[in-house]
Structure formats: C-alpha cells, structure tokens
Image (cartoon, rainbow, N blue to C red; front, side, top):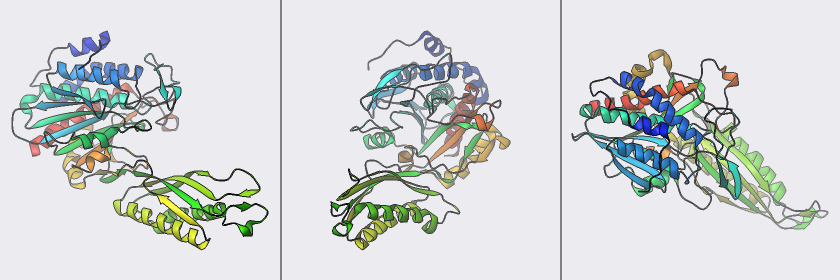
Length: 431
C-alpha cells in the first residue's frame, strides 16, 4: 500500500496514548474531541473529487493501521475498509462514512479553507467539502478509536467503511456504494446491520434526527425521445410535430404527482430539467429529447410513477401520430434511503440516551438522494442526521449544502462520534 507523510497535526493525533478501556463513551469522546476536530479540518483543507480521493484514503488507512485494525485499501477504486475483531462471537456491525468532495470553490474565509483545484468534466474547478463529508470521515475515525479502545466490551466484529464517490463517479466510470456492494464489501465477514450519519447545516448542533421508512428519496433520471415528421414551419399540416407533442407530454407528467400519487404520507417529484429539439424558427424538427428526474420515498409509488410515465408518453405520442421512447433509468439510479422500521424502533433508545430526549426528533423526509441506500437494499440499516448549525446562526442564515458558503460548527462532531459508538455497542449487546 502506497503511503504519504501525514501533516504534523495528524501525526500528533495518531500518536496519542490508548484510551482507558474502562472509560465510558461520553468520557472517551470528550478526550478525543480535539483530535476529531483536527482531522476534520485537515480533510476540509485538502478535499479530493470522487474516485480521486488518493491522499484522503492514504491518510485514513494510515490512521486505521495505527489502531491495529485489519485494513484493506482500493475498495471501489479509492475506498478504505477496516475490521475490528473482538475475538468473541456476535454480529458484524458496519459503520460507513463518505469521503469525496465537490467541484465547488469555497467562499468562507476559514483558517483551513480549501484552495484545492482539480479537473472535472474537462475543466479546472475549485474543490470543496461542501456537503460535510470531511465531518463524516472524522466522526468515523473517532468512533474507530473509541471502539478499538473498548474492544473487551464488544461481541462480534465492526467493519469501518470509508466510501468514495458518493457524489457520483466521473463520466464513464463506476464508483460509490453500488460498486462497493458489487465488490462484496458486505461480505467476508457478512454484515448484519449498517449505520450511517449525515451532518446537516440547517439542523441545530447537538441534535439527532431520524425517520422510519424512507428518509431520503430514490432518484431515477430518465429520457424521453419523441419522433415526428419534419416539415417547413409554414406548413405544419405536413408534419408530425414533436415539439407540440413534447409540450403535451411535459404537462401531463406534472399530473402524476398532483393527481395520482397519494401525497399524505410520501412526497414525490417528476421534473423535466432539459429539452432539446429543432434548430430554426421555420423548421418543425423530426425529433425532440427531454431529460428529467424522478424522486420518490415509497417503493410502490416509485413503481406507479415509472408505469405512469411510460403510459402517458406512449399514449400522448400515439394520439399525435408520433412515436416516443422512454429510457428509464437513464444512466444511474439510487434506491430509497430506507430505514428499517423494526431496527429504527430498536435503536431509538440509543439516540435518546446519547443526545437526550429533547434533542432527538423525527425528521421530515428529504427529496435529495444518498447512495447509502445501496447498502440498505442488502442489509437492514439506519441513516441519521446530526445537527451542524451553530446556536448563534439563525436558520434563515444557515448555508445550504453544495454551496460555496457551506459551513459546519466543529462542536457538532462529538455527538456523531458518540452516536456511532453507542449504536454499535448497543446492537452488539442486544444481539
């Protein structure tokens, strides 16, 4: 395994003495909080794009090796996986963090501001951890430190998964959670349950939010190609107009959510984001292409939307004497990020114990997507949100994810470390 030298601040953190085996998770999290913040700031300052997280992976692997774990590198191209074996029979608990940054140029003037540059889609771009993956790495590293120090209290194994390319692999490449699953990350040893966290820039610090069932949406990009007959724009009766046909299709697709989906319990979205057809004002073209996205939070509704899109496109085209093709899925798709209800109910006391009942609440579903869902398709899993907004920041001023202004309060990391550690310990105790 190729390694690079670590910054002095990381070396100092890794070289700290082993934590006391008899200490509680709360105490241990307090002892390493400074280190966790240092790790987060390092990764924030030196982000890397999807499938290009080479130095990030080297730093993570170096740290995990220092802990004495069984470490594998190169998973799904740049991922790192480590196993902590308690030496006693019990379940295999997986903990996952994503590690890639985004092609965003940071505007917040932090001491550890990213000035990294990289190539993306043939252009040089700024690179930034604009979705908080730097915090996810640091929190999981902290949990690895605590659980290693509490090895005598574990029964079974812990699998630490540092996943690349959550934001999507570069064009023409595979990557992310799906590739990890295809390569067998949930096998050898076979994972029984998986937990993951996402920092939230709008949720207040020291809080954790959860939801049974769909917490983040499935995403299904699709394309519709309408085929007509070209003619002079002055003689439309000689044409089969794919533009007028496409207009009718677009309007009809909007009625799927408004008139067919029962929205009381599950939101859904059908959006056409791109349309292309024709090249002159006086030519009716022979083809129009539309590209859109579907978001859904319920497996049955997802199937309904897929069926309805095909039906509407086909029948509207037929009514206009045109033909149409539906490509669904288009190039990728993510399943629903679905929190197993039984597991959620079982582990809810862990959240209230860790964050406090007043700081633990049910979250609204999110129509954004997460490829953690590929793990949840195979094994029961929970995906939770940790608050990262400072108490001094009004929610109206909280920056959005994926923006140059994105910012997280470092004091939020400790709770994430505790949640990951306690979920693992309690699940092992219960099983």
